[in-house]
Length: 408
Image 1 (tube, rainbow, N blue to C red):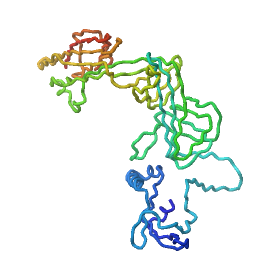
Image 2: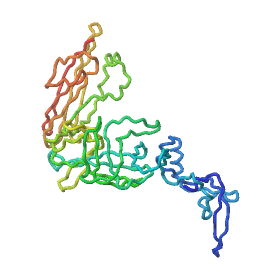
Image 3: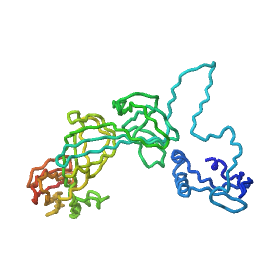
Image 4: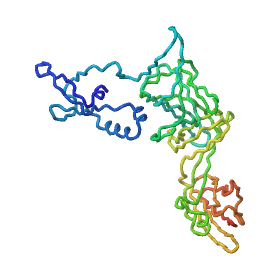
């Protein structure tokens, strides 16, 4: 950092010969090799950040001695006087004007960068069954440039509106507030304004560039259930199609997705051994094998979730469940402004136990539709979606069919 203050300038370097006698040579500091703190990168923008990241990979000073460039220092640098205005560590200064002298207590509050926090959750399932144990951790990262000793930390969770520099490529998870020391227990939670406030009651020292984890929720015996969802229409390749094209093109929506999604859901309630507002974060799933070993089986993110709300997360796609969706008929009657379309959906269960698969179908051709025939009962979930709940026995293939009539 001292070298960086004299970049472009010539200073003295002290060297010693083989007999230990000192001598002075002069060198011009072309590049100091100093990489500013990450908060400086955030402050000065994306191009500066890229420049400093390049410097970080090189990490050596360049000194010009007698017209020649060299890596490393030619000797011990002897720096000139830095002056009274040079600040070598993060410092806040106030100039206070007062009509009289005296001692007083002051509370100083300010917004600073360099702090982030997030929540992480682990869900652990037994070898068999859907009851789970949940452990939640708060991860606090201090990149502010200053150490906070015995700090009382409060974490505010929610969608707090705060203007961010345009180059930032992440969204703040919350806000942090630091005050004086406090006492146990570990974490308390309460509603605050339109958000939720989590207080770490035990004093915590946060050193500069340090990351700490604190457990804030621990619950056992949470009742959950596994949901299998088959959404067979692969619509990813039809981006930008207008309604008329969708209506008159028989091939729209006929590409089949064979994957059956696995979701886990549970209620965040006191009756279910939870019942506290959970900040958004990553949730990882583990299940114990028959040898007692924990095995990772998937992860997802949850949003800020109040108590008594249901949490639904995706863990992956089922290996032993397969879906197949096929259009069996499509007819458009332009004169009478109507169309009919039929589908056949096959579900195959290669598991050793029966499952119920939720089949979601999207009525995407037009706003006005009516199901004129169907092999199984269905529920209309919104204006353009219906679902079948289909039980499938082990090693069984189950077929469902339906016909939809569109009018415009």
